[in-house]
Image (tube, rainbow, N blue to C red):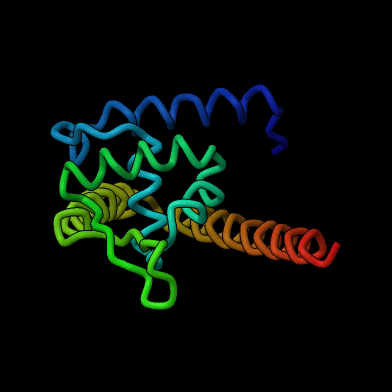
Length: 154
């Protein structure tokens, strides 16, 4: 069975609408998508504002304003860079970590419920699809790292 590009786009759109309409975890979160992305990025490791700007693909001024808002909300915190007194690191605060754990639990529960309703053939197809996304994501990440490394050598 061949799936056309238009059918695939339609299915993706319907899936996004369904996920966006789900009240499980998102109803009481007053964050923009970019603010949430910043929390996910900082959950991996503390970063300087300039590194957060690069990770999010935004200007230094925008990343600075974003981090100020997240600090005021108590979701991230600033700590001095032990190697450079002029610089600070941003890291996920306890409230930010709790928020991300709550979102992760809710999304995992929602996905688990859906997987339980799948028959074996659907579950197998889902696993195959996840493996493909992970493979492609890893290849894309590796290519981006190679490109960044080659730029830094110039």
